[in-house]
Length: 187
Image 1 (cartoon, rainbow, N blue to C red):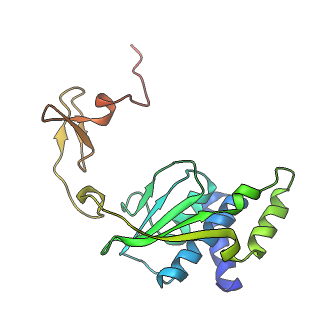
Image 2 (cartoon, rainbow, N blue to C red):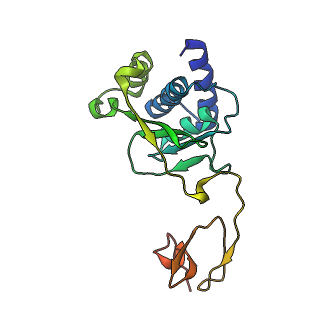
C-alpha cells in the first residue's frame, strides 16, 4: 500500500462518512490490505467481490467506499455482530479472507482520536490485523443481480422479494410477521 493511494482512499471515505476517525482508518486499511491479498485493484469495479462486514459503524462505511461493494448491488452484507472484522470473498469460488482488527483489544480510552488515527496509520497491517482464509457457502439468494419471484405475505399482505421470507407449514411469511419486527403499529 503506498501513501498516495491511502490518502486518496481516506479522502473518499471522509467525503462519504463526514469525518475521519479510528474506525474509518481501520476500515480503509483493512480493505486495502484485503485487496492486496486477493490481487484486486482499487478504483475498479470488482464484479466478483462480495464483502461481509461484522460491525455497523465507521468501519463499515470505509469498507463500503473503498471496496465499492454496496447493499443495493447485493455485494455488501452487513452482518452486524459488533466485531471489528470483515470477510472479502470471490463470488465465483466462494473463497476469500476474513480480516480481524486485533488492535481494538489494546486500545486505550485515554488515547485521543488524533493519536489513535496517527498510530493506526503508522502501524503495519501485519501488526493490526489477523487474517485467515475462508470459504463461503453462498445460498442462491445471496448472489447479486439474480431476480427472484416475489410472494405476498398472507399475514400483512405486503410483497416480499429476494426469497427473504420464512416458510411456516409450507407457506411463505415475511420475516416481520414470522419473527419480532423492529416496529409496532400504533392504532
